[in-house]
Length: 314
Image (cartoon, helix red, strand yellow):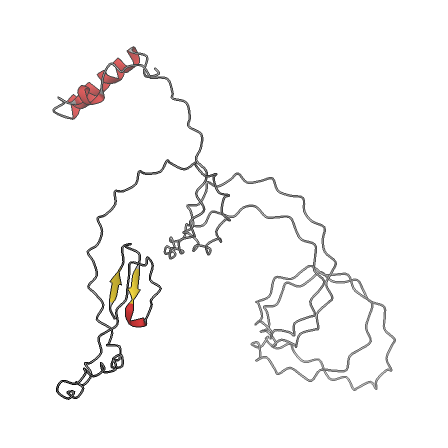
């Protein structure tokens, strides 16, 4: 496609699109010249010139030409001046408190505190009601026979029993001579228990015999029903302080809690008054010390100087 530039830089004519209304008018478009028509036959000699042949048809539009190369980049413009500082924005609202981190592991138990003084003994609590009597336990095994206790005092004479029927009188034998006392015979077996006689009146209580040998412990009887709860007795005296147990292992450190929002900046405090100038520096006082005794001597001299200057209370 061919363009023709007019007198103005912004005016172009597209001649191949048959644009004829170019602005300004100085831009004119010319079509491509068609092929030359065939030469007409020669006229007879001396005859008149034949008419001009008809103009050939306009040729087809040629293909569009390639796009021209891009022009060089323009020069970098100068950097503009920095704008003025904007106004300080207001302090934003304090953010919500972060969620509480999980509970850290319990630390090791601290050292036992000093034993407190023993408090006064509280009043004795009221005696609780008597619990129900438990069921009688099974009969224990017969204990061994204890040693015979001392003979108790003779009880009062019981009531005279009824006189029994008189038995038939046997014939009286001759009185024999009294023989020598024989040796103690072997203890015979215990005879069968006779029928129980009628109970006589209660005799006076004899003196308590010596304590017999402890019989074997009988089998444990069945547990009786639990009696009602007695009233709580007064608190007993403080027991002896037990030994301190071994320190437990340190628990694992809990995870770090979320960092809370930063608080607002506090107001600047006033500058404090300048303190009085020192008179002696500790470094200078002991800088030339050569031994333990020398250090102690110079340190004592330093304390004396500080007290004399009013910098250390006496």
